[in-house]
Structures are given as C-alpha cells and as structure tokens.
Image (tube, rainbow, N blue to C red):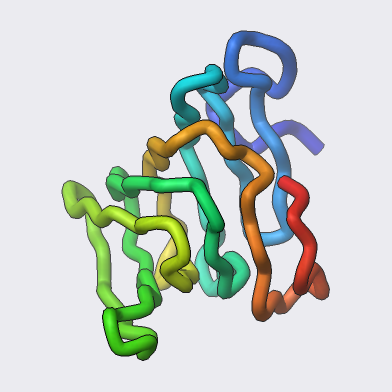
Length: 132
C-alpha cells in the first residue's frame, strides 16, 4: 500500500510521515525550539483524550471539519467545530481530543516536546502511554 500522505515518508529535517491508527502526521519541522506537523484525521476517527505537561500547541485547520473537545477553566470538556481557516491554542495541562467529523487536515505548531502526551482515553488501547 502506498503512503496516503502527500509528503515523503522518510528522512528530511522533520522526519517524514508517521502512520497513526486514526490517519497520519507529517513532522515537517523538528527543532530544539519548535515542532511543526501536518495532521490528517480520517472521517469518524479520533485522537486520544490527552493533555501535555509542557507542550504548548496551536492548530490551524486547512481541510475538512473536526470537533475539538477542549477542557474549559472549570474542567468541563467543550466541543468546538473547526473548519478551514479556524485556529485554536491548547495550553499545557488542558485536556483535549480531536475528532474527524469528515476527513480533515490541520497544521499543528508547538513547543518541541514531541513525546509529551498523557493519554486518558484512547479507542486504540494506548491509554497512559507517552510515545509518539
């Protein structure tokens, strides 16, 4: 099967495309100061309900639609429908999950802590892990 992403799958400054159970991500920039990714979520799939201890990230949707479940200041998850051109910041410690309402793609630009993830719920059985 060929790589479904429009990016090369190996090497380069960002490390190429990484297949995920919910789609794929392309790490186009991995530096000691920041991390840049293009993320694709297949329709109906979702990332873990998770938070980051240090990682500070901003999302910008470029294709499709997704629901971002994001913890508010009172600890409740609020759902935000994001479509192309919409952006949202996720600060460290804030629980969140992205759900592909339809196949969607977005840029994620963040601080460089690539493996800083605490998974609370995961439909693919990866709870509690902190691996990319």
